[in-house]
Length: 422
Ligand code: ADP
Ligand code: MG
Ligand code: ZN
Image (cartoon, rainbow, N blue to C red; front, side, top):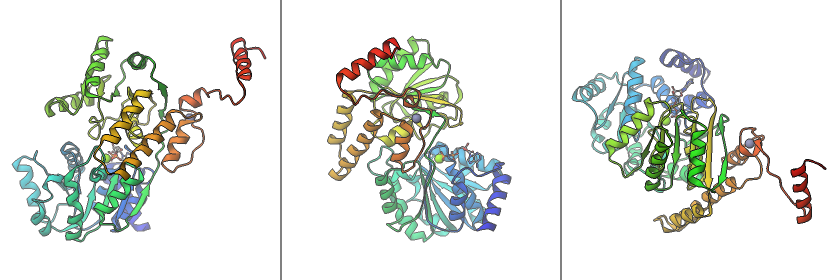
C-alpha cells in the first residue's frame, strides 16, 4: 500500500500537477487501485473524478467509466488527453474520427479509460466483452436510484455488466442518505458489500441562513441586490416561478434568466454556457439546473421555496463556493411550502415505505429550518458528523433568544432589550 501511495503521488504530480491529495482521495485511490469494490460518498467539489482516473492509470487494461452527462464526459476526456492520458468516450456526440480513435486505441491496447454513455451500455456489450476491461467506475451513482430526481433507467444495466465482465466496480456520488446508499449497493453491486468511504460533508465557507416567508419575492430580490454583480442561483418550486422571478430580477437591473426542464434542450444549454462564462448572471431555476453546473465561483444560492429534503438542500447550496471562497445562502420557508412538499410526496408514485422515508427527509429539513442553535452542527449531525458551533450561520451570527419562563418574564426581558437597562 505504501508503494501504491507513492505511485499515486507521482501520478498526481505528473498527470494533474497537484501537490497533495484532498481529504479522502488517497485512501479511495489506494482501494480502487488494489481492485477493491468501493462506494465513495464525497461532497460536490471534493474531487471524485480523480479517485477513479488515477487508479485507472495504476491498473493494467481499460477502466470503463459510466457517467450520465455527455458534456461532463467530454470535459473529462479532453482534460485527460491534454495531460497525455489515452482516454476516449463513446457517446452520441462523437465525431467519426473520435470514434475511430477509440476503437484503434482499444485494438492496440493503449486505451486506459473508456467513457461510455449509459444508453450505450447494451449496444457496446460485445465490444466490452472483447476489450480488456479490468474495472468499472460509475460516476454520479445515485442516478441508479429510482426515486431520486436524477434517475437514469440505463443505469440499471450496470449491475449485470459488472457480473458478466467479472471486474471490480467503484461507485461515486455526493448523495449521502441511507436509502440511496442501500439502493446503490443493491443495484450496482448485486448486494455484495463494497468498502464505503463517507467523507467530509462540511463546507465551512458556505454561510447558512433560513428565513420565514414574509414578502417572499422582495426577500429574494433584496438578497440578490445585496450581492449585485455576483453569480447566483435562485431555486424555485415551480417552472412558472423561475420565469416570473427572472423577469423581476431583470427589472431590478440584474442580468438574469430562467431555467427549467420544460425548456428546449438547446435553450437550456445556452443558459448553462452563459452561466459558465459570464460573471454575475443570476439563474432562476428548478432543480433541473443541477449536475451539469460545474462553475467554481457561484457566490450565492437562494431558495425561494423550501427544497424537498435535507439532501436536496445540501446538494443545492453545495453548488455555491466550490472555489473555497466565502459564499452565501438563504432558504425561505412557509406553511404553504410544507403543505406542497407533503402532498408531492403523498401523491407521488413511490411505494409506502419510500414515502415514509421522504417525509422523514423533509422533516429533517424542517428541523433545520426551525433550529435554535448552529445550523451547521445540525446539518452535519444528519450526515453522521459531529461539529462545533460554526460561527458561519445565521444562528451563530445572532443567537435566538429562547424563553422558557412565563409571559411576565418574557415581557420584562423584552423591556430590558428595548431600553438596554437591567
Ligand atoms: P466532484 O466530482 O467530487 O464534484 P471533481 O472531480 O469535479 O469533483 O473535482 C473538482 C475540482 O477539484 C476539479 O477542478 C479538480 O481538478 C480539483 N481537484 C481534484 N483533486 C484535487 C487535488 N488533489 N488538488 C487540487 N485540486 C483538485
Ligand atoms: Mg463529479
Ligand atoms: Zn453555526
